[in-house]
Length: 222
Image (tube, one colour):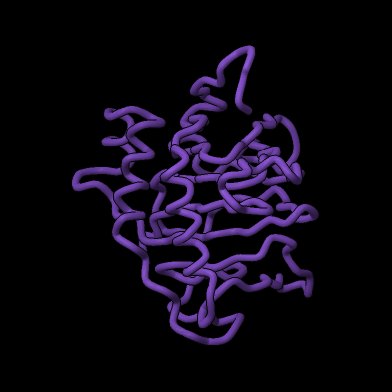
């Protein structure tokens, strides 16, 4: 929004889980969108994810570094065209480490990333159209407990952040807008989370994106 009665502020949603509004500026968002459009091209491009039970995820996905499919990682698009997964860009690794420092602080970043800092090597990029959703789940297929970094582009969504024990309450609904950062690690690293709603037509017009992109960075530990 161009004008806010109360400016949005950094918020600790749960221990180790922090929302930082407007973390990526307009130029950064446009640069990230251009990169996502290149990454989404085949081979190893944007695909529909199918679950072992025969269902499909409504958000489509492309992976960098390691290819995720339910519920494992591979070096090729094992559930798609079989092509080698696209490489993980070093600049995303730097972005991930900076995001953890900005969200959690230098001391927490040092404690959670270690010394030398853990190397981010996975990006999962999900595209949501107006009807897409993401059910409550945990990011638990990695061997590392380094914080997860999530960046939003385009349409605003409701991001539901829960707890490690159950997919149900207690949870907190957070509005994530274009440019927002959400980081979760430490006691919240395995918290359930999901996207119950996308708000169509809320992307910044100058961005030139219809829908929502979520760029999730992880450390595989593989």
